[in-house]
Image (cartoon, rainbow, N blue to C red):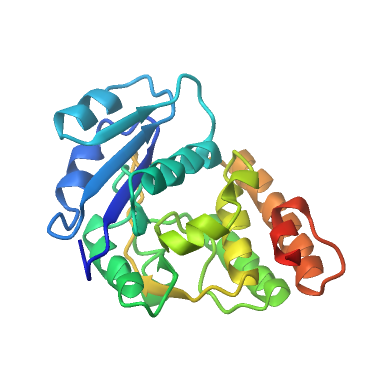
Length: 249
């Protein structure tokens, strides 16, 4: 716990058997109350490793996708009484030691959400991010900031922390089951005017780290543009896409 608040780390996992233990060992366990791993029907030893570490494991009987995995992560964490939920990818791409800093940002009461940014501090390319992904990241982030009225350094990080109050009021279940879930959720958070902070997080690209290919990245990019456009319409109160319908209340 931190400041009397229950802390739960959630791990959306798919074929993370090689990197899970190292990620888990480097979490700040002195303040974390529970770690929950949701396995999206992996075919490796992800579940076996997780159970050996004493992690709470939820198994999907079929692959639901990255967004569907996150939905189960957040639903389970809330059901287990979390006050603060941190998503840590078990592929060791993001430094798990910095989860404590993100938790503190929310436990302080200053922020409702925190992001670990690969762009702040200039470490993305040094960490091995492919140059084409870096360029796409910068372009899409600028486009989203313009349409959503925000000033984030990036929207595409998978390192995130949320307060219970935010998760209970953002309809993340209405979002995609695919990768664009991340973007939809951030747009919801921004337009709902929650306090959102960022910290600089080094990242590592290596063979065992998860990463989507060029084709899926293009599909994701198109989805991001779409989210930004319907977000602008909701922001201007012209039309509310179903994922933003809660803003009409």
